[in-house]
Structure formats: C-alpha cells, structure tokens
Length: 376
Image (cartoon, rainbow, N blue to C red; front, side, top):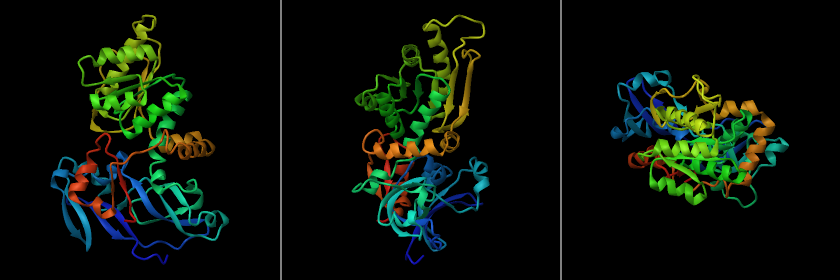
C-alpha cells in the first residue's frame, strides 16, 4: 500500500526477561479485492488487552528506552513469572482486540467499495496501529454521523454480556451472579438484565462501586468486603433464584463462596434435604483472571455443581454466524444506550509507551476506561 508512515504497537517478551512495548513501522500488504484499509481512530484498552500488553511486566520497573531504533516502554519480568511467558519469548506480537475508524482505501469488490469513506466498527486483533487491513465482511458500518468513538467498544464487552444471557438460557438457568460487577462490562450486563427482566446479583468491593450499579437501577448489589457478605449473598440468591455465576476474579475463593451460597439459598427456597445436597444445578464460569492465583473450592457445595471456563470466541462459534450478526447489530443499535462506554482519557500510540500513562491504564481501575486514538 502507498500509505506513508503507518505505525503499530508491538509487544515482546525477551529471552533475557524483559517486557517491551514498542512503536514500529508497519508496511501494509497489497489489498485484495474483498479487503479495505481502516484508519484507526478509536481503540479501547480492555482488561483482555492487558494480558498481552503488560501481564509479564513488573510495572515498578517501567522505563523509556530506544529498542532497535524504535521508541519503547521496557520493564523487567520477575524471575518467578518468566516460566509462564516462555512460550511467547522472542515473538513480536501485535495487540488490540477491537476498535473503529474510517475506511480510507478499498479493494475492487462491490462490498469493499461500498464501505469507502464510512466509519466502521471492527474486531480481529492487531488494532493498536494507525491502519488495519480487514475483509469487508468483517466491518460493520456505523450509522451516518456516528463518531468512531461510539464504535470503539462494540464487541468484547457487549458481545460477552449477550453471550452470558445466551448461556443462561441454553443451560436452563433463570438468573445470574456476576463478580467485579461495577466494571464497564458489569454495567452493561446490569442494563441488559434490567431491560430483559433477568434477575442479577452483582458482587462489588466498595460502597462507591455499589452506588454505580444501584444508580443504574440494580436491586441486588452485594459488597464482598462487608462482614455480612455471605448472609447478604444467600438472601439475594434465595430471592432471585440465580444459579449461574460469571466470575471475573478467577483466583481465590470467590467461586466457592458463590456455589456455597447457591446451595444454602436452595435450602431457603425449600429444596428437599439430602446427604448429597440439593438437586439444584449450580454453575460458575470463570471468564477473567483479576486474581491470577489458584482457584480454591471448599466444602458445603453439595454434589450438583460445576466450575468451568468461558471464552467469547468459542461461544460465538457455538451460536453460529446468524446469531452472531444479530448480536453485533444489537451492539450498534444500543451503542449509546445499554452498550455505551465512557472513557476517562484519550491517548495516542506514543502515550501508550509513556511509563506514567502505562502505570495508569495497567491498574484496571473501575470507572477508568482508556481510549487510544492511533491517528493522533
């Protein structure tokens, strides 16, 4: 392609234990008939992106350096963590799950030409770059006049919360439990459940987080830092009948607490006593790892329960292309409603490798969502 000065963010873990984020030149391939070039103007930093960007780094050691002539953010990888990242050592990886921008070049096909000049929302990785080549069929046009910012976060979180409800209905549950529930994703889930009349028990860690969700209109918001946590959780589960949990924490005892509370809530709701526990099916899916430690399960769960992992991509493959496109179009329809994302800051690619900026977005703090504009 003839586009000059295209750049991309590259993540590298070196054999000698360094984590490097660098801004490097990016040569675009020749366009095929069915492809377009999207000038990237809005790319969020999601927790799932940080797994590639900063998971290996000891953020107390971050500094600015020049690596192979390119500006870079460099940090040390703690010795205890290096074995976990051995599989990607020496491999340059491009990051960024989703984003939006303007189509500035198009192949010769009718589908590609129809997108010329339009703002589109896209997904497919490698989004932290000035320009991204995409198949036309993977680009969802935004309504006339919609800004790229409105389409930046219309896949990962919105599709995940819709996927949670798909799973709930497919497995015969009638209500949900969600942890780290005041997050951007958690707020979307709360709005969607309220609109669709799905009982939701949200678990948070502070009064401030609780207020975020009660202001949305959610009734059952439980603070896990309170002494009354388990009693409050059991009461909420008994009232709602929620038997399916989605846990963003992963490590520690949270999944066990949820399953234990579900079992006790079943007794409150009149489940018949058995030495094997209730016959109420209880399930928790871990879909995040805010706590990277071991998942610990205790007793008191009964014998009819499950803990598993949940990922968006396999779920979408399972529901099929037609349902997936319905979900994506609903994301666009509700971009300023249920699936609206508020950003606390907008930064450039170069800002991403600024040590102080990186320390900020790496924290994954509730209410602090960062948007990257690679065209700045």
